[in-house]
Amino acid sequence: MSQKNSGNKIVFSTNRSLDISDPKIEVETVAPQLQTLYVSLERNKGGKIATIVENFQGSNADLETLGKILKNKCGVGGTVKDGIILIQGEKRDRVVELLTAMSYKVKKKGG
Image (cartoon, rainbow, N blue to C red; front, side):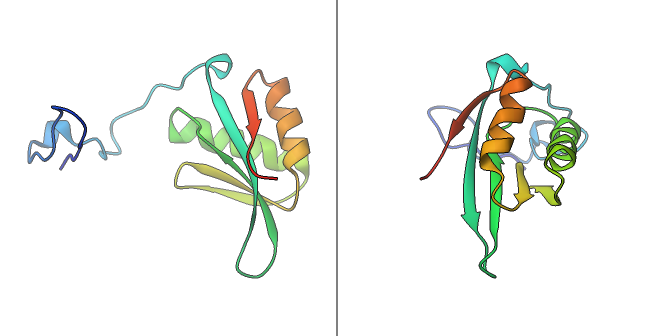
């Protein structure tokens, strides 16, 4: 079921062809030069710091690939879930450097 709530767009529909959460629908990845990614630091429940990359516009497979590249280049672990890349540790400057080298526009969030 689809739910949208802006203007005169669909608010609710039982039409399965409109289901935007359908995993079979492949999202086209936007070119790196046209994307602005946000990199921030976050303190997890255990007090550990993680680097977060948000606002990626593209397929889950491409997001997974980007996450894997960043984890390998930083030499740390991490995960990709809910449309974000989480890198273990305080690696914000290194991640910004890597993403910039890959032609992404990057903005730091937070302090």
